[in-house]
Length: 115
Image 1 (tube, rainbow, N blue to C red):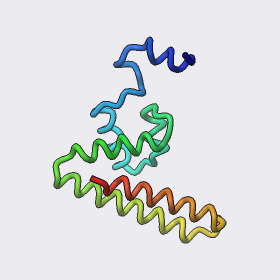
Image 2: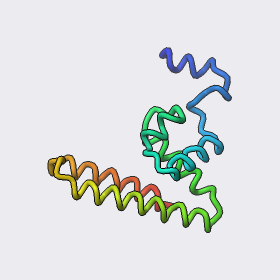
Image 3: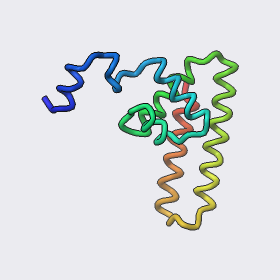
Image 4: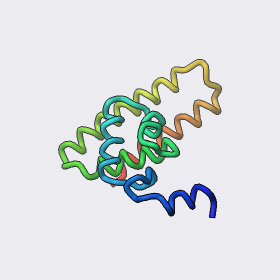
């Protein structure tokens, strides 16, 4: 057993930052709604990766009532559209890096719009 696995196994569940809870997911939704990047949300909430923060955001989003969920999705789609536009307009990125970043945006969009 690795030191990390052992630490997880012996820690109290309420102190374990790897436990996904509705409250923690709601924090991810709130932080992202306030304009923070998924990497920033991950750091703030103790996730290992930005993807984990995105998954928490999407779990919280799916728990919202329909009207609030639609509004949150609309805001996030606008945020992703703006990000894609910045990537497309960037003169600092080579074609491969721009394509990679646009694929990431599309994965985020697909996860957001999936039911």
